[in-house]
Image (cartoon, rainbow, N blue to C red; front, side):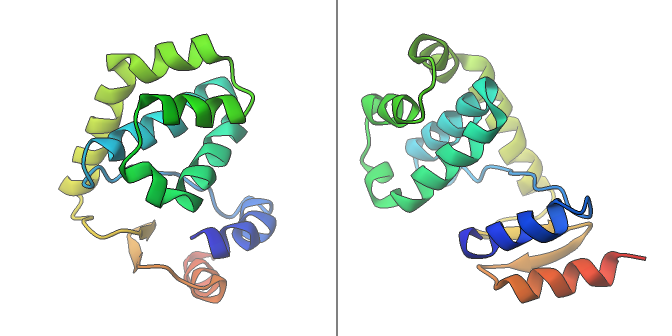
Length: 142
């Protein structure tokens, strides 16, 4: 997605045709939840920080698998977030419950592959080039 994301934002999101919504997939051990909590807690402070955290974690995913709590706190610090507010959110049960509920909902919807893109019921499975997204979106527009 990161390859096509910027074009989607510049074209379809900016035109009001698409809204990007992230649903976590928590199936790679405890750090799936910790990484998702990092992005969601970053977004609580600044919606743009969600995507910045998401991108940072995605780009450094090999580090994420063996990361400890401090790694995720450092990611937040690197984004300029308030450390106390972030840690309270990150360590709190509410965000973890929310993420578990979102993960359960995507499983109930039959989404098991990473990445999966749901465009009003039309699914694209796996990393896709921008043209695949543009064609799928175009087919859904009046």
